[in-house]
Length: 254
Image (cartoon, rainbow, N blue to C red):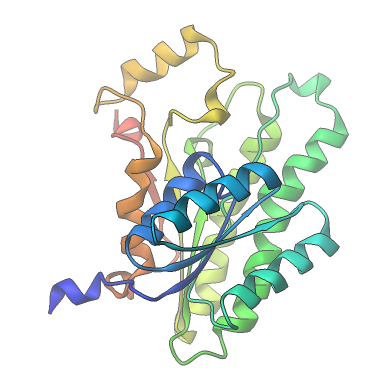
């Protein structure tokens, strides 16, 4: 049956950045659909609260706190997550990301390095470690990366973020070429303008300017990513690979 193609019940998943924002919304969608999900976040107390809330609802949720910008800590995070998942990994969403705003001539190099380490390097390292698990499984696996509207165009005062998100899309395509024939699907979701913590520091004038261009007439929410994530995590997307998918209320087409 067609409906069974969308069934993700019992899948084992890792979502980084899962204590807030879009990452939390995606993790929540997987939990609601019957997955076991390990949420990863640097904010230990907030992560514990979120996981406790989900477990109180009967969801199969676990938390691992740590710093993805630290490679040794990243290795520990992944190993702990795999312990919670009992060695089986079906879905990886390396969604943790940060943004720093400075004019390019004033951008502190340490902040450039931090943004690239979390938004790009940690993404690749989590994917690499996940592939070492998934490629040994008969069921293969699904990897969902997270781009942005700046995957397509420039953004003011965010050169590091723009560079990292453009790179994630290209990385997704390259990995799909290597992995599509080996039972691995890797695709990239590019959220539009979303009502989350990351956009809280935008000026009202800039927010209004963005809203006018969105055909849907509103900013997105974490809830809007649940459907696309469930599709990409399910067998319904088995022939989709290397795609960069905007979830933007029509922003790009206007």
